[in-house]
Length: 314
Image (spheres, helix red, strand yellow):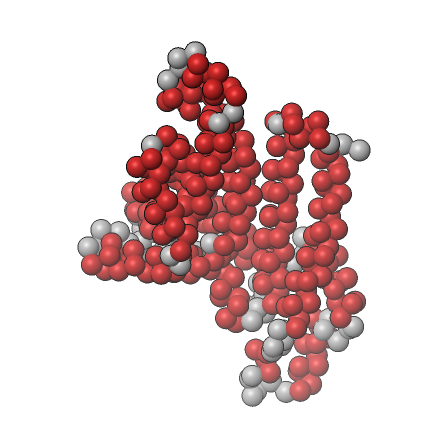
């Protein structure tokens, strides 16, 4: 069996276990799917029983899980309890905004991480400053940083819009880019802080290898060694980390989207959480889990294909 087939065979049972945990946790949450109707004094007990039968909630929990899993695999994710619309439709209309935010944030974070990581590996002064900045970036809560940026650049200086994806009156490319600046900054800072330290360590590890010492003996400058040799060796593990974190960034954009009222799937999750919209919550959590597992699978396959040491080990 090939390496990719073995990894995929491991991913399938993992997703099944995750689906069991997600389903169990959602159904163990207080209130239950019918809490919105139970709080309404105009809903009669016989209406509640009719809703239970319509939603399949009168069946045993195991039967409910199997029915939900079969429907989820087919792409039938049910209907929102909040507005009755298909969950698939509600999520698909939010995906482009999240992909835009996460995609641009990832590109910005990668560029910043490479610049800071390489500079920190080559210059001691840059390393000290980068270490302080990385600790600050990793320590500061995302929601706090977002609020501070809103207060400074939107409320106080008035340079940038504080929320949304575009102005109500409609704007062009410049308006959309202005709305992207603050949320992209928050997401990029949070990830570039960790990625830059990881790349710095990888570059320094590469600089200690025999090929780097041989290049120094030939009179090659340190800058050339870093840019032509060490960075190439350090980028493979760095790319793996970025690939793994990309899915986490997408699912973890919940806080950022909520702070900046960004109309993505993260803000949809917070809305569903407030309304106890269980079908939307289940779909979001499972999609996030599938994204993390699949990107982890792709990262393993990419490393196996590009790094001969892993091919020999397997």
